[in-house]
Length: 90
Image 1 (cartoon, rainbow, N blue to C red):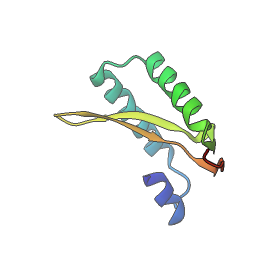
Image 2: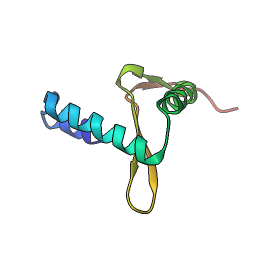
Image 3: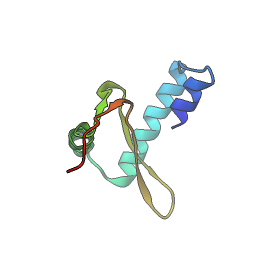
Image 4: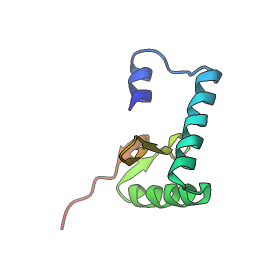
């Protein structure tokens, strides 16, 4: 969500230091949540498969991570959508 707002308001490119910081945060969160990278890759593939039934996605721009605080862990998914598949309900 933040990426979209940054693009709208003119900051479309991140500095390499900021990108490295975000990647490190994702690695640390994964370590704290005890989630293997293979598990995250599998979950990402499955989310793409489900969402692709309803939308045309930009799969290369997808970001998936876990965010946690002292009480909980949240799944955070950012999937750029090119268009929706319009179909009539039966």
